Amino acid sequence: MIWLSLIAFLVAGMTAALIIRALRGRRTPHYDEFKPQRFHTGEVPRMGGIALLTGLFVSWGSGVILTTHAGDPGSLRLGNWAYWWMVALLPAALGGIIEDMTQRMTVRYRLGLTLLSGVLAISLLGMTIPRLGAPWLDALLVQAPWIGMGIVLLAIAGLPHAFNIIDGYNGLAGMVALVISLALAHVCLQVNDRALGSLIICLSAVTGGFLIWNYPRGMLFAGDGGAYIWGVVIAMVSIALVQRNPEVSPWFPVLLLIYPIWETLFSIYRKLVRGVSPGMADALHFHQLIYRRIVIGVFHDDESRRMLMRNNRTSPYLWAFTMLTVVPAILFWNKTWVLMAFCGLFVVSYVVAYLCIVRFKVPNWLKH
Image (tube, rainbow, N blue to C red; front, top):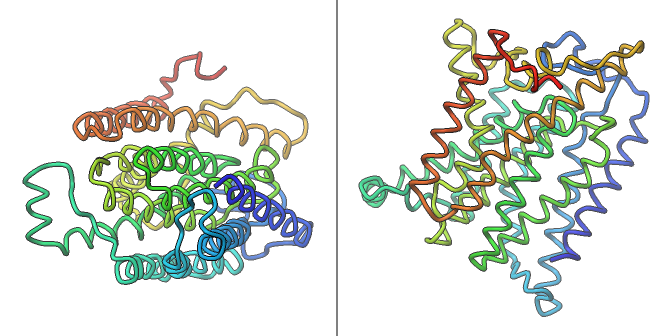
């Protein structure tokens, strides 16, 4: 498993370096510099998804070859079924990468492609949600299994867009994906599901290879392609982990992912309240408010350097915020009611923190 992660890290890192070298100094005319979610200067390639996808497919393919032809070294337990994971991932990943290259693929088509990935996960891999952690809900799933399939579709189609929403600053979405992937890998190994552990550790490794170019200098962005890859793979591993291991609470991945999930739900709510389409981009997400109203103590004569340093100082606030859910999720991964309580606590904390920032009631210690 160590060799597999090393392959993933090196391939992703080298692919990212080649992308940066090939696209250095080239303009990206389709990416409007006046978009509200833009918080950088200059032309930065948004092709990180290509590096992630290349590293992931090479490492997964290598794992299958090692398992089938070398007697499963390191107990990877990967079989030809892993190729179906690649097939299921491909529509969403390609949709995001094409959007990064052209900036002309509408939200409707990208959502359709992530839905296609969900349909493929159900049809090719048999993914479903077997339980929800409450007896009466579990009984309902038995009587109406289509509900479990619907949740799978919602998770695989929705989580990529949730990661895309939080992908606003150097190292933010990438580090969140890395931490969540490592937490999933930890529980996979706890229940001895080494096959899933191998898949998600590869995602962690390719994310690390990408991050060395993304944080802190911001030389390469993940783009929609990178966000969709993180979202689809993490959603599929989360679903498969619960489906294959009855001891894992279905609320474990919910708590792990509550930050991007709630950020998305809250964004939809506040836009609908304002009479704005949920698909319309704005600059009022939680991480953007932290950038504007908390990370203010960086002053340099050079405009681009000042923006870069404020960009970099924003992400650690959200990393810490994410750890508030990741740590209890790892500690109580098999205790449903505790996990549900922490989910509720996070939602309340998020809303309170958001309102405090909006109303300029931020403690001084947070600004330093």
